[in-house]
Length: 268
Image 1 (tube, one colour):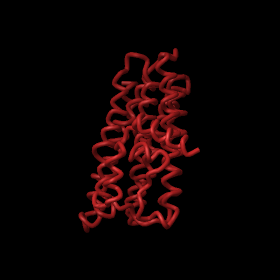
Image 2 (tube, one colour; image 1 turned 60 degrees about the vertical axis):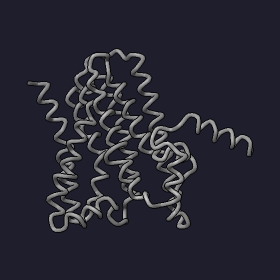
Image 3 (cartoon, rainbow, N blue to C red; image 1 turned 90 degrees about the vertical axis):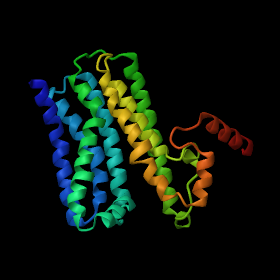
Image 4 (cartoon, one colour; image 1 turned 30 degrees about the horizontal axis):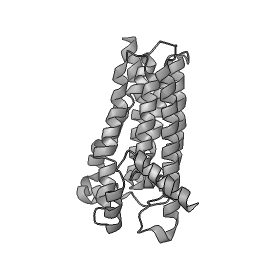
């Protein structure tokens, strides 16, 4: 019963958060605000778990730190990126499709769905809370390295995309340099990769169900809500079509990276 209560307490924060953001979206008539809630929801989950454990679980405390750093970085980036801009094209298209029923449909199809996704993706956070083994193992340290790599990859990709879009001359162009030369969605790759790292940190060798979170997130980004929506937006762009033919969709090609590096070395 105690364990079940802890799990329920850990999801209260993101559930309240989702409703606050939904009310804000209705008032502002902008469904895009939900994007800012994504990182914050996981921070609430892991902070609640640490509080319930009295901050005495080393593995959970490490997971909390990793999630908080990632969540603050992502939340800040999305907030400043969307601030003062119109509703994201995805939500704008849905608003046209749903018409007067937009708010009620969005409540279930966007906001409550996002809450459910947080709970599933957040399985490593629940696993670390239930894990009382304080001895870190080699794969926990490997997970920290993977998390750091993913965080840097995602952050650099976001920065490169922001700088590219800031130039008005690039509004109709496709970014194909930097990390975007190695895969078409390096930001999504970094996001998925760092969550695999968080999952490894949460493991003690017995709670293997923690990998459900990153596996589900990778599937979502690759096949459902990430890559497909962006690719559909550019499906008639000749430059993007050419870009697709030479660049992997998500996982960077080692051969491509080495080939690009060799070309750069020749130019230098």
